[in-house]
Image (cartoon, rainbow, N blue to C red; front, side):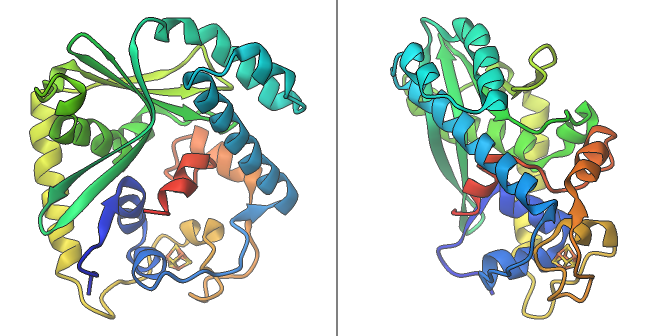
Length: 274
Ligand code: SF4
């Protein structure tokens, strides 16, 4: 069922965990479906574009474009506030080796696992993964801890990042992952990695891929959690409703740790390209 050259990403694995049918429609049938993920449409679209602009600004800065030049180009107040917060934070990155918009991949089962990082910083034998988040509300730590991204990124860096560490794989305990919220800079979420977690993640990801590999056509059921369908572009195809959920409600649920799977972040969309 899976194409021979299929590549798994945290995004596709998250989709599978959230709804097997969504994984099938999006990654196997590669079906585009013209439905809104949330209402009001204009606000959702604008928020996505703001997130994209912020990621681009940070990327340009990390590539060496002077901050003053980037600041002068800003026209959006919310992006400007995020940018100003980032500049206050950016001093901690000075003097360290930085890899912005960096991709890694490693074989897993018969396929490849890929990851696209916003930023990896290396300082001596320590590796720091940064993920920029622009959602207006900050999810609970427990919800973030369960995300596939929190498991895949550190795991993949240990598995495939030796070339960033003079040819030696990073020790799991030397890998640290931070979700940095542009609108909540006082509360970044840091997850330190460990040997124990690395072994757990390897077993978990191997089993997850084995499960997916074992499924044939017609074996990707619709989620039983119909709440997820409210914010899914395939809801009319699945006959799970027509109208989209409200953006504000999504973010409230996210903050309350309700586990809704739609996160308005640019990288989430970029990952679908894998
Ligand atoms: S509408 Fe619901 S069942 Fe259909 S793909 Fe989306 S989340 Fe899954």
